[in-house]
Image (cartoon, rainbow, N blue to C red; front, side, top):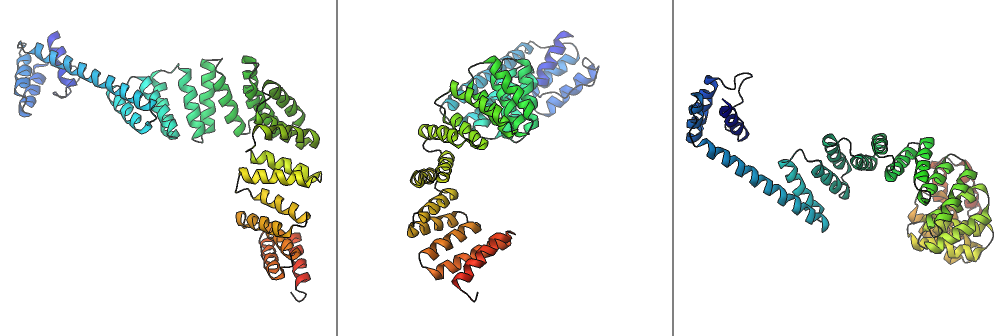
Length: 405
């Protein structure tokens, strides 16, 4: 009887037999039927074995069947090992598509290996297929639910896929499984801040500082969250602490400068922003803020340098062209101002102020016909945007150029 059951298991795994009804595994009738099916499907040898089993007589060939199954299993394991090795090798060379194919084929052979699904998830994140990555990590978690790293990876994937609540839940579970998981607390703080859950975000970042007192990124993040809460004094303290820990980090100095600027402390703001610009000359936003401060202080030459550096760092920055035009017009370089303003309206064709400024520069350069066209466009845009005062100014400029307008 035991031999019959073992043979049945082998036959079912190979797909040679139909499933027996409950409680009828050893029934003679089922064995006879199974043997008949095997004979009809052309499996003469298998059919004879099964029919023999129905009468309790197993031919000596049963051992050969078991050996064949064992050999097949061994072959499958070899294929699996080759696929895993190939996937690892392709991933190391950056062939993510090829690696993904190898790991997915491996998953078809072994559905119980969480590491295979974790590898698939990682590759999908490298391909920026974050929804697919999340599904892979969920499969890994189903097989190994106490793995904090899987939950962290799931949180990262969901966060990048736009599911911040789901990401927060995954990150929280990661921190529960591993209370010292700094990246999970950082991810949690990020997705909570994106959902305007600022108190929760601050708690996450504070936990990082308790785990790692020298973690400047957590203190910088705290400062940014405090700015979003309107707590500028507390934000300055957090960012100053970050700057002490990381004096060569341009982002920290830039955020500190902008926070001081928000407090109205332009002197401290300018100092911090200039340090940030030295560390990161290609930061267009920092140079733009420096230019605005210098322009307000009537340092036109310094402001012009900063505006041009911002435009160089980001060629499509309309605000930089606007600033360049304003300063050149103030310095009575009308041709330069016109050129800058033309670039402004080319980058921002819906800017009513851009066309108004262009008209002003053209009028100063005694190009009345072109100035009229620019002022007319400014008037139309001001009207469409519901800016009554702007429309009035544009109309006044037109009347000065064309009294009968």
